[in-house]
Image 1 (cartoon, rainbow, N blue to C red):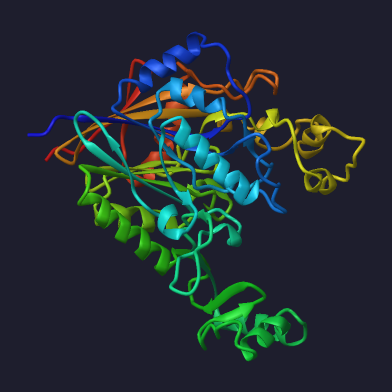
Image 2 (image 1 turned 120 degrees about the horizontal axis):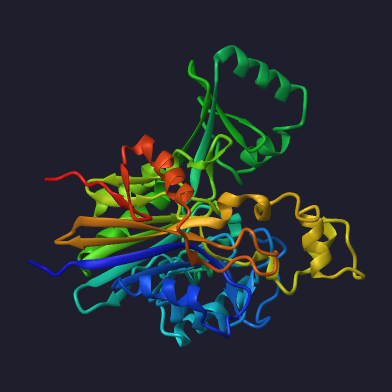
Length: 434
């Protein structure tokens, strides 16, 4: 019988500054994380000192962390990093290459981005005393040109992230779809698409699919919107899981996904549960989600955990020190304004945005134990990130005794049949025996 292996995972780490001191809150969180053999973070920032040009598009703000911030993650105890997300190419290929270089310098096992698709999608391995663990990281939230490109005999690949695209389809009853087609016929909404198809630069979607601009519509008696994982991306990631499970004792998949079901941000879009379960079916032992900057439910599938979102771990968007002109222009500002002006314009003087939503600043750190590939125990430790602090002090995690965090998560878990029991401020997931 193999030894039990303990895992810990966290949500987004958006670091924009170093922490020159290690206070009591830091030490408590670090001690908790060090209970685990495998300690996984999602790095939602580039890491460099202006070593890349700012992209024309970003993940929201342009995210850049000083290289010394990686020492903070090291001191917390993290040994595996996923960095496929909507900020990976905020500073184009120079920022990506610098981030990878700094991650290597600090000795992290990291996955999710690289100089071509093979590198970006590759499993990366951590050698523990009790097990060998593989990490595969991907993101569904990205600008299309951020996806890494595949090598060919006649062309090199393209740097970027490991993509999980999805196909969104809107269903309308036939008579409503006919009215939409009538609207398209008297406007230019589809004119360019028709030209692209005619000239061979775009495939015809087929007779059952109607494009209205970039949106896919089909006839259906049950109206609504569905999403499904892109079959090629799903197949590629599943194939890499198959490779990893033959080369490691455990495989963890990290997925960054902002997409939601309708207007319910706390509920993942349809494609995410489909993808997560396909990963488990292929041999993954856990799926760790993040992206929407709040908690989502937890599902235990085939006695393996799926965390649909772990919210935030370090979140310092209000401490960015520089933004390109594009950011200022978006809010009607010019060269006479500074970064504080821009952030206040974005948040309407901190009356809107992520900074005013308390749930963004509450999360959990899960610790779970597996033995012989089976989930044995799953603990949930609540954390808070300083919602009550001034914006320039918000963002560092501390362990919390606030019961509303676990109560809220328990409600989010109910649709998945996951039961959380409260035990002295810690959540424990009730596991099925046998």
